Structure formats: structure tokens, C-alpha cells
Image (cartoon, rainbow, N blue to C red; front, side, top):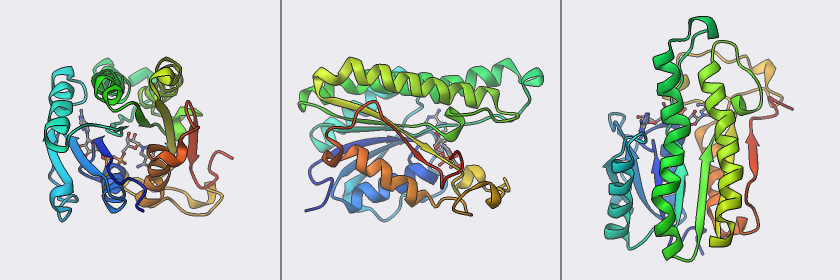
Length: 237
Ligand SMILES: NC(=O)c1ccc[n+]([C@@H]2O[C@H](COP(=O)([O-])OP(=O)(O)OC[C@H]3O[C@@H](n4cnc5c(N)ncnc54)[C@H](O)[C@@H]3O)[C@@H](O)[C@H]2O)c1
């Protein structure tokens, strides 16, 4: 039997990159998926038929989250899984980092997942439990030059993951984080990675991140909560 049969998932920022790979993998494994994003320009989601439905979701808006959850329940009958994947970065050293960009990065990468968790909890409780997977980064483990806002947001997301895992455990809602290393997506197209810094000698394909998200989202990970899966080819090892 497929690993996500009968499950309904909401994936933020699922129109491209890692999010789109997660959507693809979930559908292959039998899930129905609601994709929430602010832009669907890339067309990466075409060809999934009725198993995928797309809505406009700005993760900084609690109203958009409430509407997305309502749509998931109306269209697919409930909700079991949330993947907090939407994320942005701004590159500037700390002394020159505009405060507006600091606030935007934190609003999308950290407060966004907080809103998402608050929005889905009633629907997950109604199903008797569920799984939340937060997409953090290796920037949640160490500093990166020129990315103070991004790094702070991803360190913060680890804290949110752990506290939410404790708060929601009695509801049978598991909350975990995946920490990807350098992954080839539209966001990283223009960045040159040095393969010598990665033990496996190469960057990741989004499908390799999606594989860990799938595991944490599915019942295979029924005893895993508050965990951090580092999927970085050995970069931080
Ligand atoms: N690519 C990497 O190397 C890498 C490494 C570590 C972590 N990550 C994390 O993985 C996640 C996905 O990254 P990616 O590389 O696929 O990025 P991407 O830019 O290719 O895709 C991100 C998606 O999020 C959407 N998005 C942006 N702001 C949004 C908002 N306010 N509300 C809803 N959706 C919004 C974008 O429209 C886009 O579709 C991010 O959280 C990122 O920080 C990426």
C-alpha cells in the first residue's frame, strides 16, 4: 500500500522547488494535497489531476491560513499533514541588513509556520492527530556570512518545532523539522556551491529532501516528534 493513502496534506510554498517535490512525492504515495503559494508562475505542479488543488496563501496572513484549511476540509474531507515549506532569504551583512528585510524574512520563515500550526491544529485534532513538518536549513545549525535574518529565522524555527512538539504531543500531533543543505531549486539557481565543502561532493536534488519529508509526514515516523533531520550530504558533519 502507498505510504500516504487516505491522507490530506497542506504544503506552503509548494508551487516550485523543494515544496513542489514534496507535493509530487505525496501524490505518488496516495495523498491529496492542497498547495498554498503566493505565485504559481513556474508551472511545476501541472499534471497531478484531481489529487492536487492550489490556493493563494500568503503565510504571513492568518486569514489566508484559515481559508486554506477550510478549503482542504471542504475539498478533501479533512487534514492530516502540514508542511511549512515557504521561505525566503535576503543577502546582506548584518551592519547593512535593512530592518524591513529582517522583518520580512522572519515574518515568512518563522511567524508564517507559527500561523500555520495554529490554523491546522483544530483540523488535525478532528482527525485524531497528524504531522507537521517544518523546513528549516543547515542555516539553523551554524552562521552564514551575509544571512543574519535567514539564519535567525531558521534557528527560531527549530525552537518552534521543539516547543510545538511538546505542546501538541497529547493531541497525537507530531512536529518535526527537516534541515536541508544546498539544494538545486529556482531559489539557488544563481548561487555557485562549492562541492568540496559537501562530504558527498555534490548538492541535493529536491526529491532527496522530499524523501525525508515524506517519512516524517507518514505513519512510518509514528514515534518521531521534536526531531531534526539534517539532509545535507554531510556538509555540517
Ligand atoms: N534550496 C536550498 O538550498 C535550501 C536549503 C535549505 C533550506 N531551504 C528551505 O526550503 C524551503 C524551500 O526552498 P526552495 O529552495 O524550494 O525555494 P523557492 O524559492 O524555489 O520556493 C519557495 C516557494 O515559496 C513561495 N513563497 C515565498 N513567500 C511566500 C509567502 N509569503 N507565502 C507563501 N508562499 C511563499 C514562493 O512563491 C516559492 O514558490 C525554504 O523554506 C528554504 O528556506 C532551501
